[in-house]
Image (cartoon, rainbow over all chains, first blue to last red; front, side):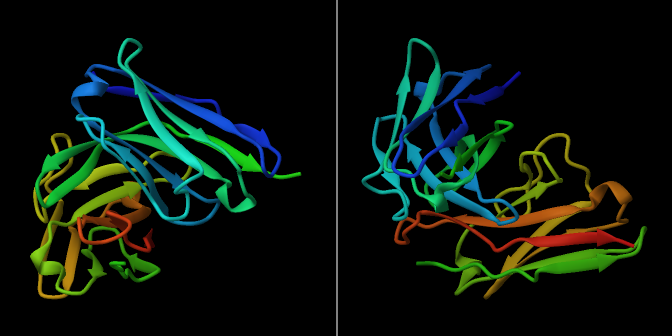
Length: 120
Length: 109
């Protein structure tokens, strides 16, 4: 059974850093595309970042240069290092597995989410 | 960047049909995916590649896509279908690459 469990969220001051983790089971993270998607309170879904099986990484403009996606193959875990956090980064952060092929990529499994609150 | 527009809300009586639209420039040339999100829960994939259903998703959920509009149709609506619904596409020429619609709140009367 595929499972994704996020941890690492919490209250952090503006300008601070936080690292989110997403432990996967039932499949191999390194063989798949993996992504982070966030949802600000009362708002819609916003894609944040993706790491492809080959190691290529991509980011939304809103987090480029501040967030870093990575994975630990030995732990089958996905990470999101978040630096220079801003109030507008406050959201529930979901990790999700990406599947599909050229021209059609989508999210088939999602974690339960972890809340990040950026506030002084 | 590519924009996907959904109506903020749709209301439907139990047993009737709900149609949720997702508008985008020439969206018919892209593959559209749909997610259901209930309060306090993670999104769940209900339709992928315009009209395919993941295992475990009832046949009441169906999709279509043509021209500038994709549609998620929920037939014989049940109280448990009340949720937010989001469409999504992937576009390598867009930034961001993974684009979500604005979301539609489906209310079962």
